[in-house]
Length: 151
Figure 1 (tube, helix red, strand yellow):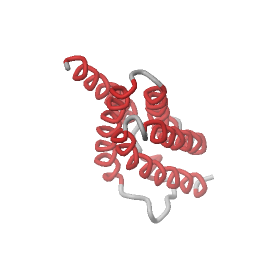
Figure 2: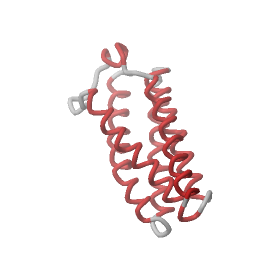
Figure 3: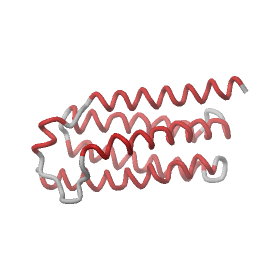
Figure 4: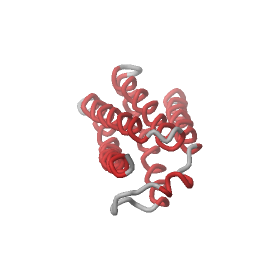
């Protein structure tokens, strides 16, 4: 049991590190000046949504690890976390909207792959990723719209 708790803490800390990395790259004046679609949510929405999603991401990774160790699911989980962290750097840090769009589409595929991979071995982990998939699908569409409006 102590190893289980230690691993849960490890998954939470790794996820928190990615979250903290992404939080370094703030929207700022550049983002405020962009043309955005009418359905763009207010900035304050992103913090609470991502906080909840990051908690679910950490737990899902831990559940996948419990089910099959450091196998395919955790590899996909790790890749998704890396790609997730890169998005903020690309979009806000480098202001590369088009490349950020490519990144987030890759992220969407990795999330889908994690859901498919864990569906039978760690169903709760897969279910925890469904809201993540939905949010990233929405964010992908938003990223695409912002890219189209500001080319």
